[in-house]
Image (cartoon, rainbow, N blue to C red; front, side):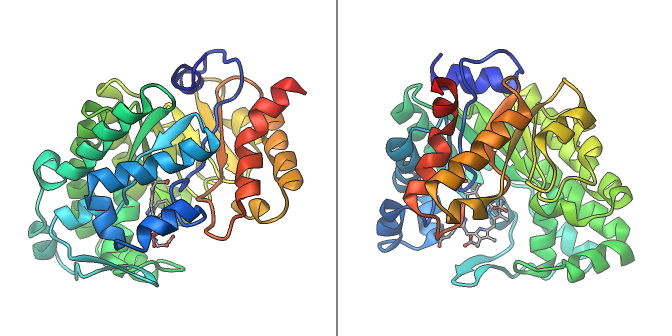
Amino acid sequence: MNSVERFLAACARSPVDRTPVWMMRQAGRYLPEYRAVRERVDFLTLCKTPQLAAQVSLQPIDRFGMDACIMFSDILIPVEAMGVPLAFTDAGPSLEGHIASQADVDALRIPDPREAMPFVMETLGLCARALAGRAALIGFTGAPFTLATYIIEGRGSKNLAAAKSFMYSQPRVFHALLDKLAAVIAEFAAAQAAAGAQAVQVFDTWAGELDPASFDEFARPYQSKVIERIRRSGVPAILYVNGCAGVLELMAATGADVLSVDWRISLSDARARVGPEFALQGNVDPTVLLSTPARTAEAAFAALESAGPTGHILNLGHGILPQTPLECAAAFVGAPKAAVSA
Ligand code: CP3
């Protein structure tokens, strides 16, 4: 099997010669070749320059040979296309949306993704050409709930106090915002599939902060809308929620092909809870990769063992950390091959 066949077979829960592997945030600051590019351009320019975005997307594949290549971009790009001013500082993203009322939500644009974000589709095209089957190409979007938290908070937040108090005090306006985001994101995801993405991952990173009833009201219906559109485009949909243990069955109810889980739940427990119809992705704690290559391999072997050979994509439970040693990243990516030859 080549990497594309292996990755797509795992998404479809078909037999594989070995478990496919990639890492969330694999194109990033732990790589010296990424930092060299970032010395010359700021983060948003990098996202919006297809030649450079494709170059950094491919860097981890060239170095480690993962089975999948996630395009380089950011989940906040479509939010900017809707009319929210976006900047990236050393402290992370900063958005000047100032959404406080229905009129503010009404003022947000519903852009045509090909017109407003042509660089994303160009990046995918360049990646597809350069990969030529060496790795499966993954597109991605943020999910409506997580994007709404950034729009309302204006930056990353520890407890989402501003976004959640908005959600509980003005639920109808919050739903209107989610609905508008879902319309934009669904078409954006479909455009990515048309441009060459062979799977699309939906990041609802912060929806694990919700109690199950609120998840069911404010996150799941909008995830479903995006996932339905991705599947209608003919590619598998991957759904990621950080801290998903309390809402795993609700994630399954979206009909996503692959559920991407964090390390706070074992893959065998996740499998027992959702049944055989879903592939699982994950779920090694990224801080394990701050130890040693041997300890990293041990954690990867444990995840492979816990998930079993079918319907599993080995990954981290959240993005790789910038201070990760290269030897540990190599040990992680090499684990499925090592497990087969052992
Ligand atoms: O996985 C990949 O390699 C593809 C690229 C990718 C990035 N961001 C690049 C990035 C992806 C898939 C994302 C998703 C993303 N972005 C999420 C969801 C997943 C997650 O990790 O929780 C979120 C919440 C964001 C928003 C975002 N972007 C934040 C909060 C930050 C600042 C924190 C940080 O890590 O610096 C970013 C910046 C960002 N996005 C960087 C990268 C490589 C670092 C920017 C730099 O080069 O200085």
